[in-house]
Image (cartoon, rainbow, N blue to C red; front, side, top):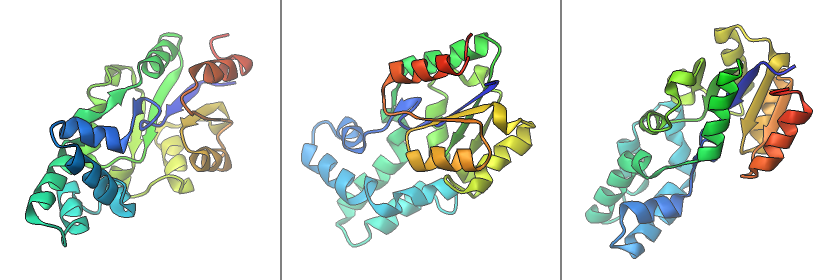
Length: 204
Protein backbone atom coordinates (compact mmCIF):
# COMPACT_ATOMS: atom_id res chain seq x y z
CA UNK A 1 0.00 0.00 0.00
CA UNK A 2 1.27 3.46 -0.90
CA UNK A 3 1.53 5.85 2.05
CA UNK A 4 4.43 8.04 0.96
CA UNK A 5 4.91 9.88 -2.34
CA UNK A 6 8.45 10.95 -3.19
CA UNK A 7 8.89 13.45 -6.00
CA UNK A 8 11.84 14.46 -8.12
CA UNK A 9 11.78 18.17 -9.00
CA UNK A 10 13.33 18.78 -12.44
CA UNK A 11 10.97 17.63 -15.21
CA UNK A 12 8.48 16.41 -12.61
CA UNK A 13 7.34 19.36 -10.49
CA UNK A 14 9.07 21.81 -12.82
CA UNK A 15 9.98 21.76 -16.48
CA UNK A 16 13.66 22.01 -17.31
CA UNK A 17 14.53 23.01 -20.89
CA UNK A 18 18.10 24.43 -21.04
CA UNK A 19 17.67 26.17 -24.38
CA UNK A 20 14.35 27.74 -23.49
CA UNK A 21 15.80 28.74 -20.14
CA UNK A 22 18.66 30.59 -21.83
CA UNK A 23 16.31 32.31 -24.27
CA UNK A 24 14.25 33.51 -21.31
CA UNK A 25 17.31 35.06 -19.66
CA UNK A 26 18.63 36.61 -22.88
CA UNK A 27 15.52 37.40 -24.95
CA UNK A 28 17.26 40.04 -27.05
CA UNK A 29 20.27 37.93 -27.97
CA UNK A 30 19.21 34.50 -29.27
CA UNK A 31 22.71 33.72 -30.53
CA UNK A 32 24.19 34.25 -27.07
CA UNK A 33 21.41 32.20 -25.50
CA UNK A 34 22.09 29.32 -27.89
CA UNK A 35 25.84 29.47 -27.23
CA UNK A 36 25.43 29.41 -23.44
CA UNK A 37 23.00 26.52 -23.65
CA UNK A 38 25.29 24.47 -25.90
CA UNK A 39 28.66 25.29 -24.34
CA UNK A 40 27.75 25.65 -20.68
CA UNK A 41 24.30 24.54 -19.49
CA UNK A 42 24.46 21.34 -21.54
CA UNK A 43 28.10 20.79 -20.60
CA UNK A 44 28.76 17.43 -18.86
CA UNK A 45 30.16 19.30 -15.86
CA UNK A 46 26.87 21.18 -15.24
CA UNK A 47 25.87 18.52 -12.72
CA UNK A 48 28.93 19.09 -10.53
CA UNK A 49 26.85 21.66 -8.67
CA UNK A 50 24.53 18.91 -7.47
CA UNK A 51 27.07 17.54 -5.02
CA UNK A 52 27.73 20.90 -3.38
CA UNK A 53 31.48 20.69 -4.01
CA UNK A 54 31.53 23.94 -5.97
CA UNK A 55 29.47 27.08 -6.39
CA UNK A 56 27.57 27.60 -9.62
CA UNK A 57 29.50 30.83 -10.20
CA UNK A 58 32.83 29.05 -9.91
CA UNK A 59 31.58 26.22 -12.12
CA UNK A 60 30.45 28.66 -14.83
CA UNK A 61 33.83 30.40 -14.79
CA UNK A 62 35.69 27.10 -14.95
CA UNK A 63 33.67 25.71 -17.85
CA UNK A 64 34.11 28.87 -19.94
CA UNK A 65 37.62 29.91 -18.86
CA UNK A 66 38.95 29.89 -22.44
CA UNK A 67 36.09 32.03 -23.77
CA UNK A 68 35.89 35.81 -24.07
CA UNK A 69 35.33 37.71 -20.82
CA UNK A 70 31.90 38.95 -21.94
CA UNK A 71 30.75 35.40 -22.55
CA UNK A 72 32.12 34.26 -19.19
CA UNK A 73 30.19 37.06 -17.45
CA UNK A 74 26.98 36.12 -19.30
CA UNK A 75 27.43 32.45 -18.42
CA UNK A 76 27.95 33.25 -14.74
CA UNK A 77 24.78 35.34 -14.87
CA UNK A 78 22.88 32.42 -16.40
CA UNK A 79 24.22 29.91 -13.88
CA UNK A 80 23.27 32.09 -10.94
CA UNK A 81 19.83 33.15 -12.19
CA UNK A 82 18.43 29.94 -13.64
CA UNK A 83 15.80 29.38 -10.89
CA UNK A 84 14.00 32.46 -12.21
CA UNK A 85 13.45 30.79 -15.58
CA UNK A 86 12.02 27.49 -14.37
CA UNK A 87 8.46 26.64 -15.35
CA UNK A 88 6.17 25.02 -12.79
CA UNK A 89 4.38 21.83 -13.83
CA UNK A 90 1.02 22.86 -12.42
CA UNK A 91 -0.79 19.48 -12.73
CA UNK A 92 1.96 17.70 -10.82
CA UNK A 93 2.09 20.30 -8.06
CA UNK A 94 -1.69 20.00 -7.79
CA UNK A 95 -1.31 16.21 -7.58
CA UNK A 96 1.20 16.59 -4.72
CA UNK A 97 -1.12 18.93 -2.84
CA UNK A 98 -4.11 16.64 -3.36
CA UNK A 99 -2.14 13.68 -2.03
CA UNK A 100 -1.29 15.66 1.08
CA UNK A 101 -4.95 16.59 1.60
CA UNK A 102 -5.88 12.92 1.34
CA UNK A 103 -3.53 12.07 4.20
CA UNK A 104 -0.48 10.81 2.31
CA UNK A 105 3.01 11.94 3.19
CA UNK A 106 4.91 13.81 0.48
CA UNK A 107 8.66 14.28 0.08
CA UNK A 108 11.19 15.64 -2.39
CA UNK A 109 14.26 13.66 -3.45
CA UNK A 110 16.24 15.60 -6.01
CA UNK A 111 19.67 16.19 -7.46
CA UNK A 112 19.83 19.89 -6.79
CA UNK A 113 22.50 22.55 -6.45
CA UNK A 114 22.19 25.20 -3.77
CA UNK A 115 20.76 27.89 -6.06
CA UNK A 116 18.02 25.58 -7.28
CA UNK A 117 16.43 25.74 -3.85
CA UNK A 118 15.19 29.22 -4.73
CA UNK A 119 12.94 27.67 -7.36
CA UNK A 120 11.33 25.39 -4.77
CA UNK A 121 9.96 28.45 -2.99
CA UNK A 122 7.93 29.33 -6.08
CA UNK A 123 6.16 25.97 -6.28
CA UNK A 124 3.60 26.90 -3.65
CA UNK A 125 3.83 23.55 -1.89
CA UNK A 126 6.55 24.00 0.71
CA UNK A 127 4.00 23.89 3.50
CA UNK A 128 2.74 20.54 2.20
CA UNK A 129 6.09 18.75 2.41
CA UNK A 130 6.84 16.23 5.12
CA UNK A 131 10.52 16.29 4.24
CA UNK A 132 13.11 16.55 1.51
CA UNK A 133 16.57 15.40 0.47
CA UNK A 134 18.68 17.60 -1.81
CA UNK A 135 21.89 16.16 -3.23
CA UNK A 136 24.00 19.27 -2.65
CA UNK A 137 23.29 19.18 1.09
CA UNK A 138 24.09 15.49 1.44
CA UNK A 139 27.10 15.32 -0.95
CA UNK A 140 25.52 12.39 -2.74
CA UNK A 141 23.30 12.23 -5.81
CA UNK A 142 20.92 9.88 -7.56
CA UNK A 143 21.18 7.12 -8.65
CA UNK A 144 23.51 6.26 -5.74
CA UNK A 145 21.46 3.96 -3.52
CA UNK A 146 22.68 5.81 -0.47
CA UNK A 147 20.56 8.88 -1.14
CA UNK A 148 17.38 6.80 -1.32
CA UNK A 149 18.17 5.04 1.93
CA UNK A 150 19.03 8.36 3.55
CA UNK A 151 15.48 9.59 2.98
CA UNK A 152 14.04 6.37 4.40
CA UNK A 153 16.20 6.53 7.51
CA UNK A 154 15.80 10.23 8.16
CA UNK A 155 12.01 10.13 8.03
CA UNK A 156 11.55 6.57 9.34
CA UNK A 157 9.69 5.35 6.28
CA UNK A 158 8.71 1.83 5.35
CA UNK A 159 10.24 1.48 1.85
CA UNK A 160 7.48 -0.86 0.69
CA UNK A 161 4.98 1.98 1.25
CA UNK A 162 6.92 4.46 -0.91
CA UNK A 163 6.18 5.58 -4.47
CA UNK A 164 9.09 7.34 -6.15
CA UNK A 165 8.37 9.54 -9.20
CA UNK A 166 11.30 10.64 -11.37
CA UNK A 167 11.82 11.50 -15.03
CA UNK A 168 14.87 9.21 -15.42
CA UNK A 169 14.45 5.46 -15.59
CA UNK A 170 17.89 4.87 -14.00
CA UNK A 171 16.83 6.87 -10.95
CA UNK A 172 13.54 4.99 -10.59
CA UNK A 173 15.33 1.67 -11.00
CA UNK A 174 17.75 2.64 -8.24
CA UNK A 175 14.84 3.52 -5.96
CA UNK A 176 13.37 0.07 -6.48
CA UNK A 177 16.78 -1.49 -5.81
CA UNK A 178 16.90 0.50 -2.56
CA UNK A 179 13.68 -1.24 -1.53
CA UNK A 180 10.99 1.22 -2.58
CA UNK A 181 7.77 -0.61 -3.27
CA UNK A 182 6.68 1.50 -6.21
CA UNK A 183 8.38 3.54 -8.91
CA UNK A 184 7.12 5.53 -11.87
CA UNK A 185 9.09 7.08 -14.73
CA UNK A 186 7.30 10.34 -15.48
CA UNK A 187 7.62 11.57 -19.07
CA UNK A 188 5.05 14.36 -18.97
CA UNK A 189 2.00 12.11 -19.37
CA UNK A 190 -0.17 13.01 -16.38
CA UNK A 191 -2.95 10.61 -17.26
CA UNK A 192 -0.53 7.70 -17.41
CA UNK A 193 0.67 8.54 -13.90
CA UNK A 194 -2.86 8.96 -12.57
CA UNK A 195 -3.85 5.59 -14.00
CA UNK A 196 -0.80 3.99 -12.39
CA UNK A 197 -1.57 5.33 -8.93
CA UNK A 198 -5.23 4.32 -9.21
CA UNK A 199 -4.22 0.77 -10.10
CA UNK A 200 -2.10 0.73 -6.98
CA UNK A 201 -4.83 1.97 -4.66
CA UNK A 202 -3.85 5.62 -4.29
CA UNK A 203 -6.81 7.81 -3.35
CA UNK A 204 -8.91 4.67 -3.28
